Length: 208
Image (cartoon, rainbow, N blue to C red; front, side):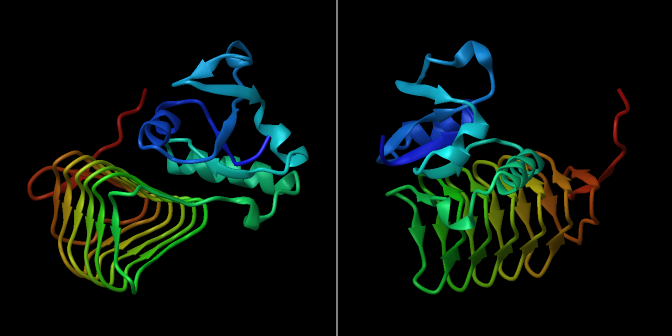
């Protein structure tokens, strides 16, 4: 076996497969019902812990930033080194020459990244996002499809920005914060809060 093993057999893995990532060797997932099955034509060849005994590169394809963080922490505890993680940038994405994408991150079709943008480790940038000059997207953050970041925006670790949301220039979205679909963020979003609307405002968390 050679190439890249996808960690997780959910929607993000199927997005990566559909985007045409080369050298996919298989999928690792802990669901016992998926063992030996195929997901979008790619075989599930083992469980997550098996990654430690294998030599292939890895790409964590779990949708939630906090869940990606937990998986990466679990793999680190098993001895998986940071150098094992692949980075996938779709062919149709445009990454400016002065911008960088960290290990383990996924950048899908139609994404435009302009000047001096920093995308951290294990980030997910879904199709047709726009990131403009001097933006910083910290580790394990997620931008859903169609998100637009103006210049000098900072998206903190494990934050989630919903589909077609926009963030004003020089604004920060806090650690583990959530911004809802179609929101227009005009001011800083504190850590762990949920904001939505136009303009975006804080929502109360719903207790289940």
